[in-house]
Image 1 (tube, rainbow, N blue to C red):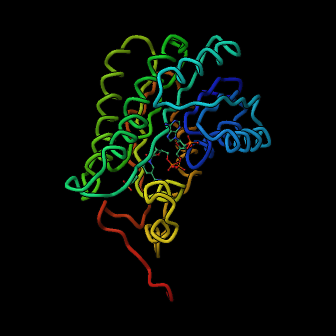
Image 2: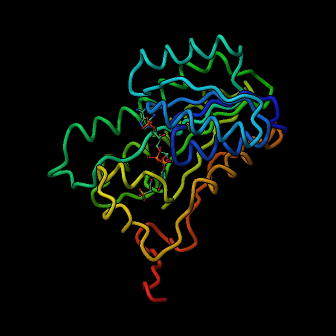
Image 3: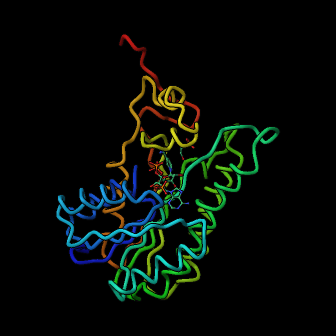
Amino acid sequence: MKLSGKWVLITGASSGFGAAAARAFGAEGAHLLLGARRVDRLEAAAAAARSAGAASAQIQPLDVGNTQSVTTFVEWLKQLTPRVDVLINNAGGAHGIDPVATARDEDWEAMVQSNFLGLLRVTRAVLPLLPHHAGASILNIGSIAGHVAYEGGAAYCGVKAAERSVTGALRLELSGTGIRVGSLDPGLAETEFALVRFKGDTTRASKVYEGMQPLVGEDIAETLVWMASRPPHVCIDEILIKPTDQAAIHKVYRRTKSA
Ligand code: NDP
Ligand code: 8X3
């Protein structure tokens, strides 16, 4: 299915996977609706998407953790288009890596609001704009963390497991509409994810990827483009995508620095 001229909404488009997806869908000639909280970064992402060939790239502040912000965002986009062909629920991330015994409410709440409730809120608001039987897609960004729990990841793994449940429930609820619902679940990818998780500690963040080759935003973006561009009768339910160096969540091959 051609993406040229389609309307693609990307949450969390100010960095990482979202900004890379804006460029990749832009290169296909799509119209882009980009949301996140950092407007200066959204502007940069939109400019890059236009340079890549986007039919249009428009931005609006969006906090998926706030119902009013989601409502305002959708009212804004309805002035631009009566339909959204591809909804990419990408906004989210991890806050902290503390065990349950010492983790903080504000970190848990931030993760639940963005990764879980944010996904639900945005989807509820956009559903009336998704055309039936025209190859529309809802693509949710999950994680390997939604498949396997790890120490310090109780809340993050929990919200990403919840994403898989939301994806499954939506697919059932939308049966017969022709709207595809898929989950793209990455392993280690070098974006601003670790920097956010470690609250700006660049040394700790860079250690996550030390000596191994992580995924990058473009790997995820091209997979999203592939999922959305399948023929309308084909739904890619779920993809787990990891770096070759990450054989399993805890088995990461790291070269020595001198190698
Ligand atoms: P980044 O930190 O680079 O990007 C996260 C994006 O989410 C930013 O654009 C940020 O924008 C946005 N965001 C966060 N909270 C909100 C909010 N409340 N409202 C609106 N936007 C929000 O990390 P990634 O690109 O890696 O993360 C994208 C998704 O991929 C996340 O859901 C993450 O959990 C998931 N993921 C990441 C992996 C990785 O290893 N990198 C692996 C598996 C999944 P802003 O701050 O401007 O609002
Ligand atoms: C991000 C991947 O393994 O850091 O979702 O949780 S992981």
